[in-house]
Length: 546
Image 1 (cartoon, rainbow, N blue to C red):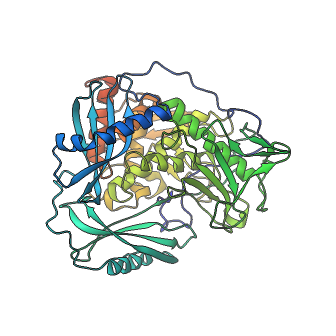
Image 2: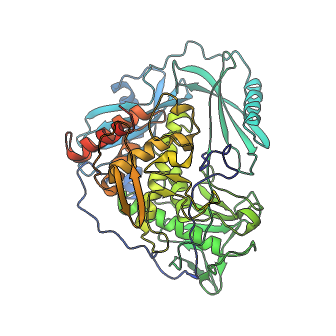
Image 3: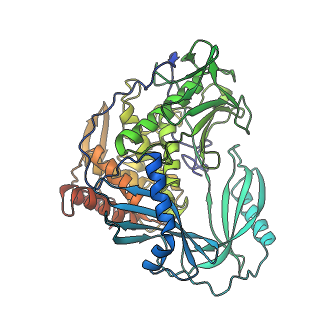
């Protein structure tokens, strides 16, 4: 879960810019974004897989999992469960596994096995470096005690209402020596009305809390910035339903102020959705049109840029829910429903449906289904930055004249009330809280502020340091060491970050490991010692990550 910005600093959570507007026609098969010409794919770039081909690779990898476990030196009680498979243009395959020990899930035990086109193992990337060995699988505290402690932990974070359905035994390998533990998921509501999915890890021997992270990603914004766009719909009798058959059958539903359930599928008798103006009515369709547009642009961005076929890369679309709650000033991605949900903002007249929200929040879904970066500490900052990076990519990709691409997060929503953006990628500290550079204390910051280090790295890698104006926006990016950095362009920077996320990062990746992951990605894509590889190294050094 990930609010777009820290709750303790502002009353609402997060990024977004909002979209929407004019009458939104539903007859087109594509959005109004101009498609970018496809360049010849690099040998180490991911190749687009059909759903059937991806399923076959996953089934083959799972059938060979026992042999793979032995080959890479896992113990007799350890087993591998395939999570995802990425195949490169040159035939290299990166298989991501979850791990079990004596039948128990190993949290923080995920790993990636890299094999060449002949099937020979080229290397293994592990989240946990320590061997998984647990002397006793008999807990010293009860599951009920662990559950009680987890609920107490949730309340200290300000959750308004909490529930817990029980604790499950796991092996915790996310930090230090692997131990037997309990994982409790605390539900209910957070203090601002956002659904609560706080995962609390408790040592089964001592009762000590080992780790916690949220499972619902959130954002905020004000809408009506993208003008008239073309959407897909499906005719059913005399009505048109807001279903995008070209993008995994993404559907848009109206919750009509409710906070649970799926809602009612948005439909129109005229095949026009929305009016382009804000309305306090829970039946207004402008928010639905915004949500559908944002989802379509995000799908197209991943498909065109990386060959990724939907959030899970399986061709299945998520769904969106609008008009959530009463005056709910937030929006969130939820893996459990595989959906985006948008509130209507203060006074129910500022729906938080927006292009940036869709790009940022749905990218949390991509992260969850690839590296699974833990939403805490430095890995949490990298998780948030990944959504800012790809959300920025979506905005540039959409090429919408009403909302040109930039390196400002939430620049259209005026969430601060003074016309300033929520975050700045060229110099993150301009928001008053984000980190420009890495330090030993970065991991203790809220993840929306520790994300500044990676956001700054991405800007420097894309555009370089110093003063410049892009799409009418002035930037001036400094460096930690005072050295000038030359950018390689946003397109290459995006390819490097995506490859690092999908084939080299794990759930526990920190900033030092992210440097290694992106250097590995740059080496695979462009060659070790290439200008791109050297630029990655220089950009990390410029934000004090070495």
